[in-house]
Structures are given as C-alpha cells and as structure tokens.
Amino acid sequence: MATRTIVRFPDPRLRERAAEVVAFDAALRSLAADLLDTMRAVAGIGITAPHVGVLLRLVVLELTPADGVRTYVNPRVTWSSPETIRHQEGSVSMPGVAADVERPARVRVAFQDLAGAEATEEADGLLAVCLQHEIDQLDGIFWTQRLSRLKREQLVRRYEKIGRGR
Image (cartoon, rainbow, N blue to C red; front, top):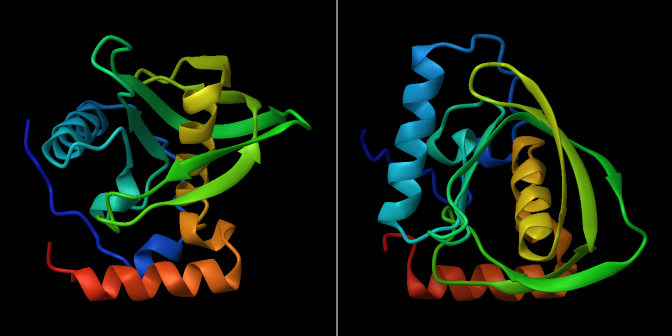
C-alpha cells in the first residue's frame, strides 16, 4: 500500500500505551498493509502501529519470507516459560544499534486477526522474542528499558553518535 514515516527514538509516543483495536474494518487492513510495506522498506522483521505514530494495538511480523506475514491485533502474553533466552534486539525506531535482551524462552499469546476472530499461538525462539518485544512496545515499554542502566546509556550514546537522521 504505502510506506509511512517511522517515529524515531526518543519520541515520547514510543513510551505510550496503545489503545485496543475496536474497529475491524478497511482502515485497519490498510494500516496493516502500510506497516508491512514500511517494515520491508527498512529491512525489519517486526513493527507496531506505534512505530508509525498510530497508538493502536497492531503488530506485523515477517521473520523470513518463507515464514510469511503474521498479523496480531490486540495481542497479549497469557503465559511465559520460566526458562529464558538471550537474543539480540533492535528497533526500526532506533536503527543502527542492537543489544542482547533476556526474555522468557516460550510464550503463549492471545490475539485477534484482522477480521476480529480470537486466536491463541504458542511460540519459542525468535518468534517468542519478537512477540514479546512488540507487545512491550504496545504497552509503552521501549526495548532499551529491558537493559541495565549502564548498557542503555552506552547504547543511546552510540545511537546519538551515528546520528538520528539515518
């Protein structure tokens, strides 16, 4: 459909909780298509509506072309494993920097599809990491908040050094 402008760190909208989607209409489907185009344009694997300044609970993932596109409306983690994994994370809103984040290794996520139908999915590995990362974003938790203060400050300095205007 169209690429949208990505909100860049430290924009305060990245720390706001997104609203529940209540209208499962053409505008929602259009937003999801725009998110996919925007994510592909910056070679990302996950994006949320807040990343483009729309405070709605919508996530689009495409881990690999072979995996296909996954769309989650109003997702929430309903269970997470006690075991954890560390995985390198970054953000389309903070390009050029990444850091290892520790998260539960497996999760169960309840969500709706673009038509409003309820669904549940269990995930592990990269999919579990991405779902938790993007649901955090919907809750107003930017991924750097999962880092120690020292690591976060170092990362922000590195990001500022390479320039926000990439």
